[in-house]
Length: 337
Ligand code: SF4
Image 1 (tube, rainbow, N blue to C red):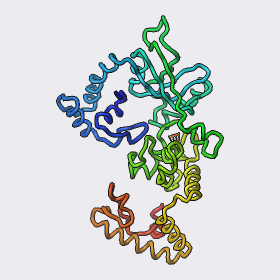
Image 2 (cartoon, rainbow, N blue to C red):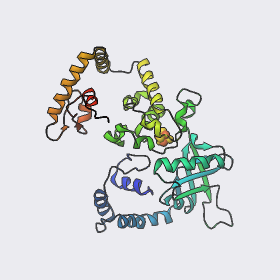
Image 3 (cartoon, protein in one colour):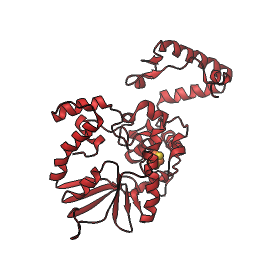
């Protein structure tokens, strides 16, 4: 049973998370009210505090009766053997101290040498993730319950996941192992904001997911992700551990080219674009015609429900119609000022 409020809501709805820090960001309060009324068989509530209370009341017996609590770990401290958990809801403390057995599962890159090192990361993580100077709960869990302790597990296991991570050490993508999963890159990514977290197809959405998913799951299985970026650079600018995300995405694109993974359609489209881009007058004329046609197709709504050659996009979401002017026309008009 999931105990983080967002994850619990998703478990009830049989849905996947769409954000690593705010997993249920794609649902509104009314949808959650309906879901709770249907699944909890209680009168429908609409206030946020009432909904939270209802979730607490449903979850509390699960905490009290569980034999085993499973947590992640934001950091592992090598010098003390501790698992560090950062939460805002307190569910982490109940999961890790009430049941008889605690199992912590986390990736090998979360191991940090000393508590001193963790203190630096503890300042970076909440500021970039939620804008807080510190999260509500920071738990440092070291070993099992001692005779003088009031609570704690009798058994404590740590499972370290490799899953392709050690293969990245020393390679050109190594910098991705610095990721502390704050989610800042996706919060600022224009592509994430338009397509939503589910479109990334695996546990990690946004720019960090566009790199981690191909690295851990295989580039062949996620050929679109390295291309899910405008290269605007916002992700790298906000990343608290200074991962050069656009550079890594570019390296993945290079690998795709080297392995011949580009479809003939895409290669043709790029060649056509390159040919046009080398002829500025023709390029300006073609883009002028293109944006005006799209503006007309967008109608009063200024939205395109279908777009030839882009059905993969419009099957699942609308496409905003351009203003009817090209970038260069807007620039001349001073729209950038
Ligand atoms: S890549 Fe950087 S910004 Fe994105 S989640 Fe990881 S640490 Fe945060």
